Image (tube, rainbow, N blue to C red; front, side, top):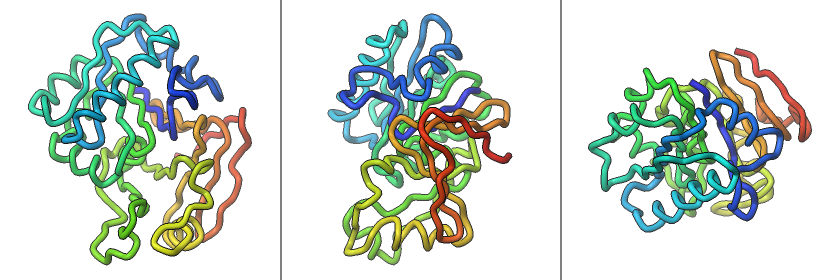
Length: 240
């Protein structure tokens, strides 16, 4: 299996697969010439947006010269076929969205079980990347979640990696939620006993045969402090 954890796999205009840090080239190299693609939505009941975002992904692949023979969207409409659809796919895209909502859907369709023997390529996008971890860090993101004492920040994930990521740093680094700063007041304290890898759009992690390599601008949050891992255009191998 080849696993890509991305913040965003598309260009800013959504028309192409992102070429920054060699992502498009590396993805092209590990896929067969003709692709059967499965897009797994983050919100199974929001079928209108699922079709819209799935179509963005399909068009971006085709615009970037990937030959897509089959493109299927997996949500509430066909979730009973999850096992079959996973087995028939060369490329699985785990869509972005609300982390807990997607996490619940993944558990409902037993995705973790069906991916155990999967030998194709998986691309996580934002929430999809976050939910690949064994333990998922679901940093509060919607109004009220930080204040909600019952909100669960740690969830069981797909167990494809130990790495917990925070995406979209370029967009959210100064954001506030429920009157607090999401990094200074949420992520930093939460890193007291955990390590988070922070990605900007265009950066990604490639995981294959136990080796995890970060490509592009990235940071590490650990023990309440944030440090630079590397600049854009660089590669860094994470400790296994």
